[in-house]
Length: 154
Image (cartoon, rainbow, N blue to C red; front, side, top):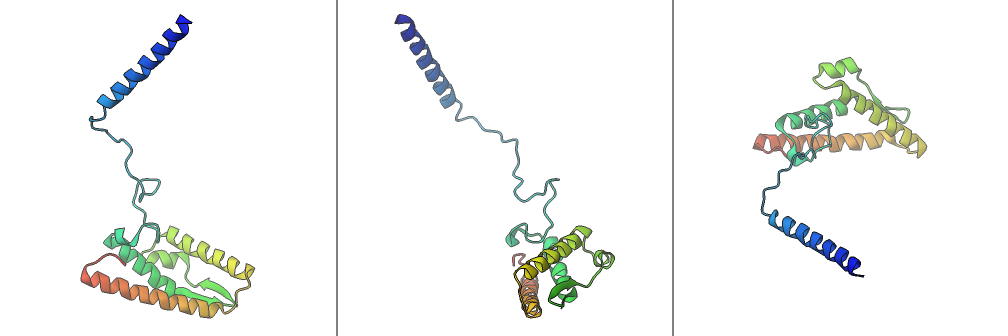
């Protein structure tokens, strides 16, 4: 019975010492070795992909990129036989100063949209795209007005 009490005493002492040491260390400066990568891509470069960072955190270059991409989308997106088409090849897209990965995202996004439209038997796709183009043009005008004022957020 005395052995059991001695083990309990040792356990209590160990816990007290641990608690005391941790309390003494609370005033020490904590060094964080992991940096915040919330808005960084896997290769630690800032995201350049439309919609991946909040508008208020976009740089002037990113705002210009979004503006250019929106303009190209509005100009070259059409509807044929109830399917959304992008009427620009990759080479021409890249020659406009946009990236191959942006082109791939646009084409894949439209393919997915067409699959969804077909699966859900959505009609009047041309009206839907015209409404979308109108909304994009309004957004482009807002971006232009804010950039003239020196504001970067949309």
